[in-house]
Figure (cartoon, rainbow, N blue to C red):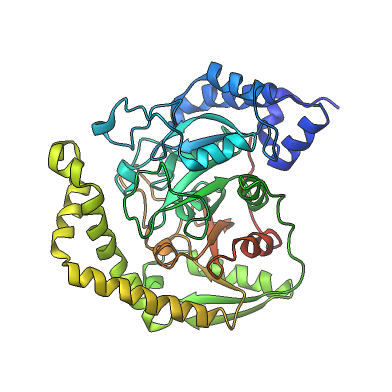
Length: 426
């Protein structure tokens, strides 16, 4: 059976792999199809900041055998690549060329994946937006800071992309753009070769078209077969907190409607209040971030402060208000919040939480409210987001599921069996 070149970008990772195994497609044909999408759509979406068609096609021809053989992917531009510049979303690093690939990029190469290029990031993976646009509505933000990763996947320019998350930089842009985002347990992908911002929180993860694609890519990068969808009925807690005061029109109603679907499918869903140690952690997380970021960006702040955005300069200045003693006290509070989280998981299998305040924000000056992913990054718990409904203006609203730390395969297996709602990919 032949597959039309202009439909290749609509196939799942499993379908692409199967077609290549059967000889219906070659890695070069797959790579060329996605390069064609980049040429067609990137001038408007601005997801990719660098790519090289010849380099990508050569990589496809020499792709290593592996579970991701011939599958194209992209890398957020805060992760080092030896074959492409890595500029960290900052003019300070214009043209910067690393000598080595980051560890996660080497994992992808050794398992057969084909690097297409680098995608846009907020400045040093912060809230200062990139130029990328939301493919679902170009006048709206794709989110941040993994803006290019989400926009590239949502535009059908790549099957999956590496992103990073310190606060909400994977789960939020994924649902803004109508795709799936996976922020795994801290260390699931090694951080070697990542420009660190908050070393206690920064986590490399994935954005892909669907949860199925996330599972295929996440496990394939480790040389493991994908985890199947988990049968059975789960205990799910909708965890309400003071952060819910920041939800916008339609978000809470969408979660309530989704809960009814879960209950109809036989799952047990309860509404719980967030334990106070976790509430405290959500409030202190920005200050912990500012303390660490002021130190990790110390060289840039000393040598090229005028090249930092006013937004980032202000955040780093706030870091001066955090003393060492306060920082260490916050690290102790994290331990208390972790204990409360483990107590919750003695009662439930999954936590359900908003991934964002609502639909993608109109305009490109703001990447949106990041607070809803922060706690799970701070506590090193794996989280996964995907769209569940249309919002008031027709853009996606999503759900975020959280599992016990280091239970990433269980999170992937359980969420594969849950109802999902993805915009069609033309």
